Length: 195
Image 1 (spheres, rainbow, N blue to C red):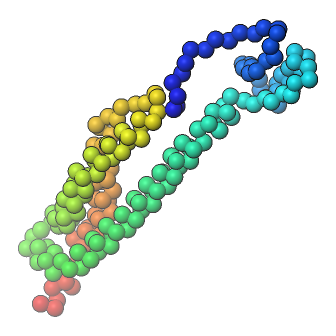
Image 2 (image 1 turned 180 degrees about the vertical axis):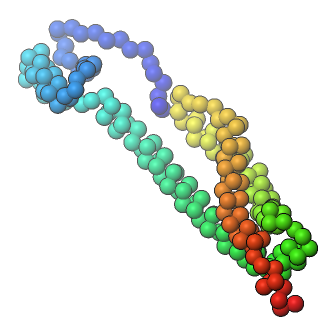
Image 3 (image 1 turned 120 degrees about the horizontal axis):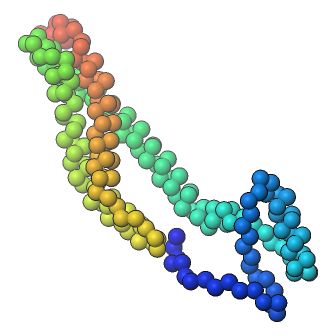
């Protein structure tokens, strides 16, 4: 992935020993196939040590660091999402407790449950939108810089950022909506009793 594929010429002469040999096999028993290749190699190149491996194992070994990096980013992203949801849930709880009387008055005056839920949830959408406006160019630049190390790479499409932003807003709405609906369906008499 980091080096351009160059033209390749394969030849075999009797004067030189075999340096590298690729064999394509279609076998249900790879261990027996490897033993057969080893025996045949001993006949063709007597006295030379056989170091056989499968191509998919070699490729996996070459790109193990990229796989580990992808796994590390996935775990870090999952932890970040969980922590941000916990923070949003906590902030929603605090804000709703501060506005219990206001929600009670609105409910007494005829506000619907969905109207109150939208009112409370809307407060959390603006900070997320601002965060997305800040994070999108940074993420686009960071991904472009990382992809420059690869010879064969993709171009980042604009819709990926819209999808990520939409998912972020959806996760925030789902996280906050529990608290806002709970406050909206609460009995307003309890919240206004102290007035």
